[in-house]
Image 1: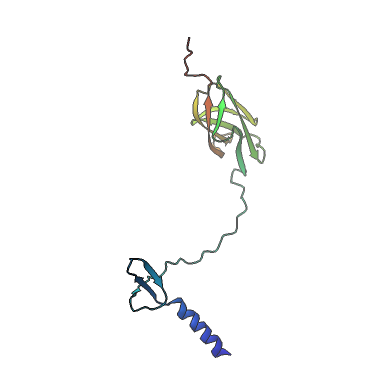
Image 2: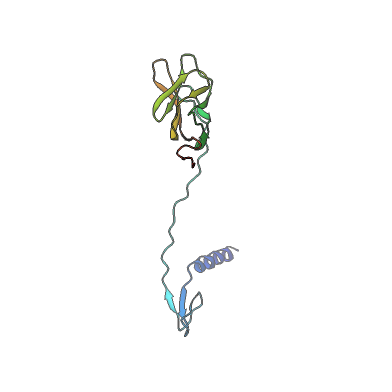
Length: 168
């Protein structure tokens, strides 16, 4: 029984390293085969590239940051949203997990500059010019230190009819 298993394994291993032959017929058609032919040449196949197996990592539970905030998100407007606002007024809605702590403030940055600050979840922005703007929400401590950030989103302010001349 052991000899049978050994010979089966040996045949399998040998067939994995079988010779490959290349033959070109009178019409120039190229054929590759594992069958030897007097008119064929042996093809040298280089070793296959291999990489070691990588074990997938288990997802980690999201740790509470040193600031105590798991998440700061801009709910509205959405990233890459086009907003029709000829007056340039836009409301930014921010959510935090957990809720904003006593003594902490939400600051809204527009193009890197503080445009609004307070403890409410909704922040009105006024006078935004048409075009694209980067908006980010920060949670700051009483000393002004940034404790957490939403990351930046981009919004596009559109003024309908701006730049068009009326034909008369």
